[in-house]
Image: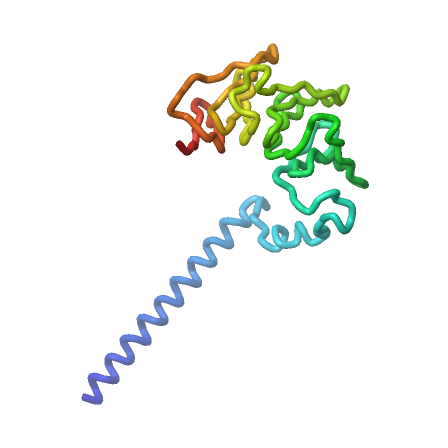
Length: 207
């Protein structure tokens, strides 16, 4: 019995040593593969890459006009745009500016910057707006213009430059001539998210 126990213990130790050897061998191979031609995946550099940056939380106590942010985008001129329930906010790197409600922009739910660097604004109760960043003027699309719902929840763009957007009553799009078209599909209601691959659209909806 003692001899059997000794043999089992020796066999277990041998298996353990072989496992350790294989593990170390794999580590050596992986390390060598990362150092070929000097194009290594430098793990320390990845960790250290963000070490020179600090994070700042903005709220209504240090400049941000509100404590909530529903969406955030950046236009080509460098401005950061923030959509909130209190309206549209622009950040220039130093200070925040909130567009007054008299501009027609309020309760911003989603933002999108298209391929022509125009800022599209989806509101909760005032339809869709587009800002031409060259002259900072808004163009609105509301129920009076044929929009099926004033609550816009998602915005995207297809490969032809059409702006596709989802509302709580379905999907619509703005063509390159800035004309509104409603997509007449009764099965699509309460549109919340749009996602586009190279050849197809994914619509997530709730009826």
